Length: 305
Ligand SMILES: [Zn+2]
Picture (tube, rainbow, N blue to C red):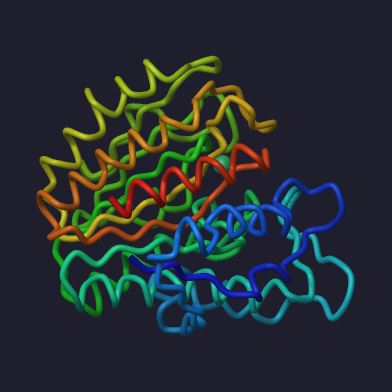
């Protein structure tokens, strides 16, 4: 299994006190240490091409982001999304990791990868940066699989505690992509009601604050995993946010670290049943550093089987 990351992803710095800090990625990489995770094939993420970004983002938006990184200090794009001098390189590597991981997954049997990158992506829409996200990394990967590999069915599973509104918006009219998400509701960004179904390709499981392991697992077993199996994806992508953990400061779900291993094993079963084991996961949220590190390690260990 491959691990994609890049030192540039540590150079995106939205400022002191911001929860989406470089320390998050440092914690994840420290947890995926070379002793316990010696079997990981560690690869430097390439930059995403403009063509790859423009499959899901408006050309004018891509230009605006690429041209707006400040030479020093911070540029505020919205209330909680900021760019620093290192943000462009980080964002290009974060999206590029997905493209490279999708290529590798499709070019060899049972290809699996985890992209340890930031900034995260699933809130960025076709033309708007929001929720700490600049480019929608997982969407760039899915669109690349459709366009370059000719796939007809790509599924995206999103278990970040926030709804992946950007990914949903980008693919709401694309029947070749199934988007399946569990998330807390009410919570930022406010979308993800169960009746948001797109062209029959969206499966949303909103969970009330306080939801714990049992109800979380039931939502996946009863609603989301059956949808994923019924779709028979040729490739499974995962928006892996770990902020539904009970220790996370930004939300009120009550998951334990073990829940991430449990769900990952079931997602891998979807990939092995329908997609020849091809699964690519990318880091989204997770803001309590010890919980993030332990949960990401549990996720990657489960992916390694
Ligand atoms: Zn989140």
